[in-house]
Length: 546
Image 1 (tube, rainbow, N blue to C red):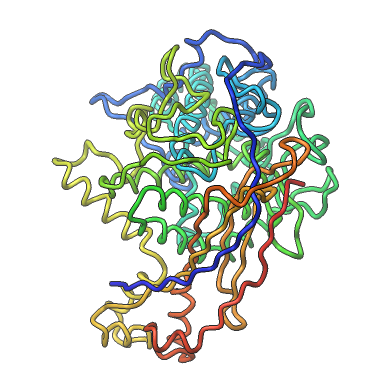
Image 2 (image 1 turned 90 degrees about the vertical axis):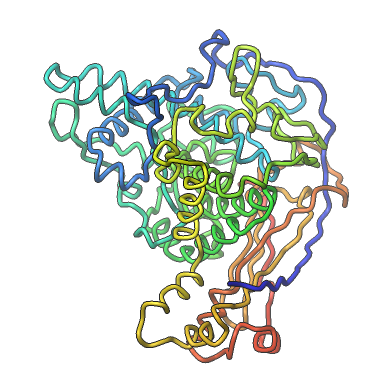
């Protein structure tokens, strides 16, 4: 059990914005009929009419080898598709950010074309918007999977067609940190060996390692327009600086406890708004861990770091599939925490005007549900309507809604209860108590949960920003917000102190519990912690897109 202490730190900056008007289509993308633009997700079902399951990538690779081979071959096929095709890897990635064009036959705000992408960030549409985006990607990848399976040798045809029918895109569960192991090796190697549909081993370029542009893109800015492929943790801003994947693996290890804590904080949220904000903060760390650029001694960005280019990183969809999974687990375990109307302030994009009121019925462009209507957060609340479930959300396995909800709540507690909860649970099964275990025993299982709450007016910041904390001489964590870069030559200068206030939460409890265990802190109560607490802002940085 927990009591809560919140330390507040306010950071204020100027804000700026522009007024948006009606929508128009710039006609730059490949034109297709509305019917072919419908987002349905993967449409196959089992014999009982149930959807198939998205699996953690290590589970898919280890236990579903035929689906794994089809997945890798399909990604390779998708990445080789003509970039002028709206349904190529490039075309799908372009929806999110640059080159800031309308997609398919969906419209956009005329003054935002060339200045913003469709993806909403720092507002409550963030989670709902990515759901049909992932479903569209899954739909297209599944089409490639079925094409590959259909061309398997006759004696292997049924085997691979069955695997294709059951296939759904995987997710990478980064929210458990290194509890599930280090970064999968498959993310770190430029080549991969798979078994093709003929049963033969094939060595090929790894489509999960990088995406190769063909040709170099137009509409990109600075170094990005000269880069032949996506990179992670480059050593410089030279467009030809190669990836340093070992730094990705090291960063994930170093941020493991932070990611565990951030996921735990998100699931403790009592409102959807706070959950959405907390999960988006955690998600931003993963962008940094993969792309690089947030360390003082390694400040150069890879594609995953700036939102403008992140969707071209092959791990983007694996990352966001897990974000969608956590979103699903929260809504199922918190049915009384709906998405409420809110004002987006100046966090507009290609289809949202400044200061627009949004809610669960706001259309999520450019994802069409019918030829005349776009998906909304409310309409895709149930993932089954888009053709998938997660291992923890297979409703058909339970006799009642009550037993299903209890199962989901148990999964959330077990997987994302946080590091301090794990330390507490571990004390139940050991003969010799740690100092923290003895503290829990004396307090009847109660402890105080310490967090730093940071409030920022960030509308004038030129992109992603980070606030780092120290406790004494120890790193106490950080709060990071991943934002689209705003260039003054695109939106003009000036600013305002008005605008949406952003709130971030950084947990201190894990660090304080370690201090109890090493006898440098007597307890987690107010009397023990406050006299010894010297919390400092190490640095607060706000940087635009390089």
